[in-house]
Length: 400
Image 1 (cartoon, one colour):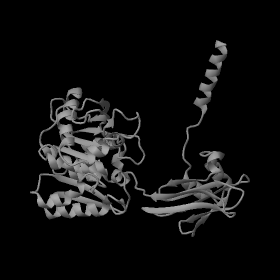
Image 2 (image 1 turned 135 degrees about the horizontal axis):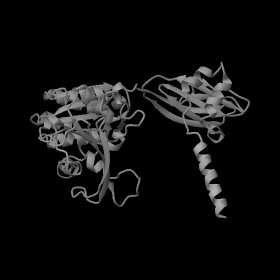
Image 3 (image 1 turned 90 degrees about the vertical axis):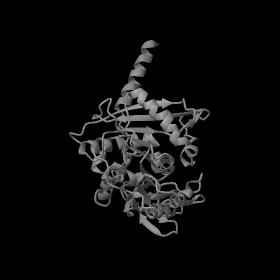
């Protein structure tokens, strides 16, 4: 019996080792093959998706093109929300596989439904197409020293009791212990610190390259997640995020100053510069509002803000900032901000309008700022493409 069990385990292990890793269909290759080599197009699709997926219908996006595919005994077409034809699918093999590829343009929204000529509905959806080529600074470069990244858990907060959170600390290769380093703190940090993500910020790589090129000083990064309540299910979204990020006041910045920064200093034996011009705080959406609040409350600690698609709307009061900026004596804050023209519009407010109000308020008070604008949506895709440019500008007033 033991021998049989061992052989069975070995067989399963070999089978898993030989199983091919899943890969998405190469949409551009499928598009080139449809009509000229349908057999190849079918093979490319079937190598990524099985019958169970294809009989329901499936779409896949590559850059600005959408691949629609379905198995059906009847011809299938793709229609928009008004019932107008977007495209008809081409039959690829004798098993009913059909597909079509269409370039719908960048920063576009495609609402679609797949229907057969007999009236059967397959998959449907609303697709926001937003593509940006990755900047060269988000890939490792020969000759650019690579920093180290260490992960920590932190659950000892007195300011946010009964919370757990993960954080990662990036230390550049050029850092010398005993020498004060510049600091940048990223909210929603772990996903921005991910160096393997496709389309993500890959911020540690960008920082590696900008330090190496002399576009920013030797800078230690703290990439910190919002707090998860100790009572919530492990692995679920941190429920303390909005409370920490969207609330006005000095609680979060004090949390950083009194708890997180000392924790990092103790764990890694590092020293941070005290000049606020060498301290930046960054984030997107509510993380952007959080970054602004931190600098607004303590400009003596954080003199730089990097943010995108800022939530300056009425969730927990950040809609007050354009008015506060206009009415309050200018503070020593340098801000690099990114807005999107097709950002959210809901019961809490209009994100593009809120960011326009923020921009005009900063201009009115003659702040040291720059606002970039894109035609994209809420999220970090454009920010990932813009990060090197925004970081270069943000640190351009500091000599490396």
